[in-house]
Image (spheres, rainbow, N blue to C red):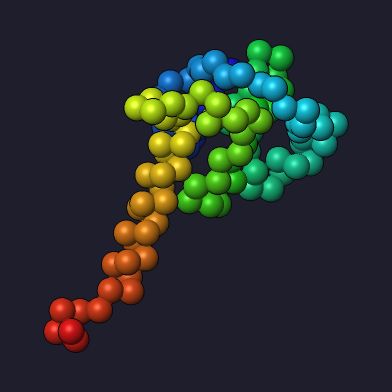
Length: 108
């Protein structure tokens, strides 16, 4: 699979190519791909035939959708890069919200 540099997926993998197991029965209908991608959704991962395998919502802090199951290639001590990136984004979001709503020490 080819991954577009500068994307969340690229940052997660740290490289522009990855091998994943695709075993789902769903996919992006290529007849509508251009129309779907006119908005903020962007194809950032493609297989060797040019089929979309990873999409991201550009206007969202972390919206990464895959046509493979990252958890299938994860294991104890070896989590999938997309899962790690999601958890890091969730922790960053939590920290941002916690700081935003934290009471000043003087109020306690």
